[in-house]
Image (tube, rainbow, N blue to C red):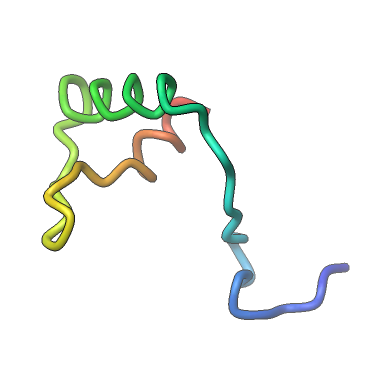
Length: 56
């Protein structure tokens, strides 16, 4: 059993991953075109986590 910390709850664990830039760009395009991704208020870029989870 993993110890609980700020990166983990009972239902999810936060992870950092490195994605090649060309793949990241493709995910951005998919997020906008197919998932109507919300735009982050500071970066003005689409939020990608929901799209990545759907693709997984």
